[in-house]
Image (cartoon, rainbow, N blue to C red; front, side, top):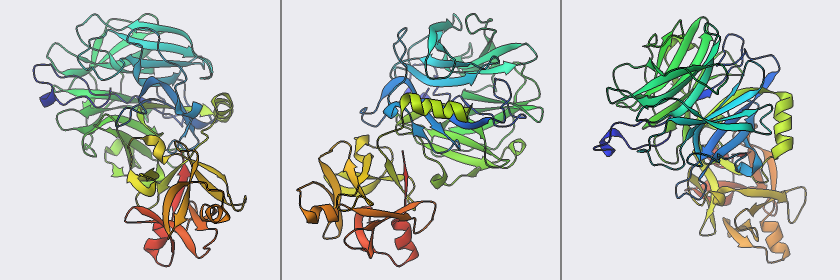
Length: 467
């Protein structure tokens, strides 16, 4: 679950679980996450999530998908619209989880909750089957318990000792605080009686399991009282065997831990989701999962799908990556991320162009179609998605969003040429068509076209073109 009220915000209501970002990833045979070991062909990744935005304009409680080749920067599928939506229970989902089962097909689990009524008690979770994540079949709800509590943020893992899958989720125990529960199943149709999987004696939520890393299993979770992400570990998968060991990390109020094996080095990433209705993902890195210590990752190196909340990541093959894009399509729009303010994106506000911190509504203010340059098709022009008759153009060196008046002057003012990033050649800068000594840059967060000479200027003029 995501962004639930704190205990002090829920006077008279027993503590409720905030969120489990069941995000499990394996990219090496020594790091499995509830399915068979990752294979050499697993060279891409899929993320599942639901969406929320500050004013609700981008909120949708269906299953959304995005794909990536590095597990850090994502291409939303289906124009960031849901690919499937529950038809039973509350009619919505939160906290989806994707896992490849032992037979090579996928199972999708999710919390049965539409919206943010944290007082709802629900014994069920959503379940789908899928052979390829391009279609979803055998939809059902699975009853986890008969207790007067919730079944939030389900995640599954393969337990080789039992020859069954474990399903962990969050619920309130007899002591009145949240714990991580577990049921075992062979088929995701019937489950064993629930057991307490992890209870350190205080409120914990958002369990995320990484299995068998050099013989050790790691369970990351949120310590609700401290608003931090903490790890526990065990050499078995037995309920009650995990013991806390790591240093807690946080970025403000942080929940939804995500442990991800880096596909580019021997290290690991720990993701977290901020404690707001429209959370922001942050990441930390370690070279040694056993150390339990983490260093904040540079925000330039990762970008979440717009409006995404409580995701799940799983490795897929290159063929599956290609087939998912073929099935759902890549976005017809882009977002521009600032190099030196990587929490900010180019958007229009009152028809002026600027960079603002993510997230915001209307979120479509930051979506652009990069069309052939109006004055030169080898260049680009920025067409607004939510004001499609308008393009960015410079006027007195300030950048504004205006309707195309059909003049040559407008076409030239609205045309830019892509170059290697002035501050980082793997990023992008945009040179003005009719003032070729000037580049698109931000100054005081407002966009301008200015000459570039200093290191600060070059950073101001560098952007990432993504989604």
